[in-house]
Amino acid sequence: MKNRIKVWRAEHNISQGELAERIGVSRQTVNSIETGRYVPSTILALKIARVFEQPVEAVFQLDETD
Amino acid sequence: MKNRIKVWRAEHNISQGELAERIGVSRQTVNSIETGRYVPSTILALKIARVFEQPVEAVFQLDETD
DNA sequence: ATAATTTGTAAAGTTTGCTTGACAAATGGT
DNA sequence: ACCATTTGTCAAGCAAACTTTACAAATTAT
Image (cartoon, rainbow over all chains, first blue to last red; front, side, top):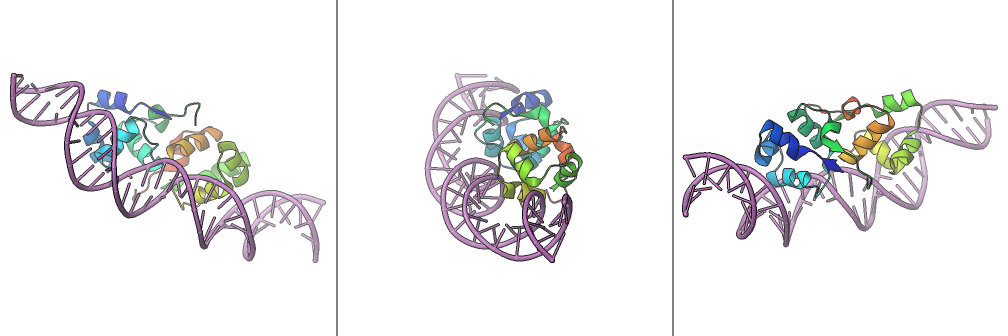
């Protein structure tokens, strides 16, 4: 799965730590999701999308391997 | 987290088993997600939403406990 | 240049998603 | 009433998400 978290963070000018705080997880969790080390739960996807005021699909996209 | 899988299945007239097959998981997994026993990964949420041709947010919604 | 913030990554532990196999209850069709 | 399909749930096991602690590398600000 691909994600555009880094891009949306840049657009909203917030750090991984701040995003983590806003969605209630550790900074490492945000980093791991952003760098594709693991796939978040739907709850986190919804929360991240909500922070960026975007639909989930604008932040996370399936790729061929999914 | 709430979900409207049952409603969308009714609308598309497909069983839990068929949905499971379409997204590549077991029937029990679909049942467990639909009945709220656990929260699916974002990959599954995207696949389920895709089957129903709906945005993820139309199928899954955060509730107060999330 | 140097100090402060941010980012990447690792290891170890706990929790939760997802699997298979199985069985009973419910629903639908004839 | 009977058979077939669907749904709900349980248990045991494996894989993956997420946590904390910790440290180094990279970026940004002064």
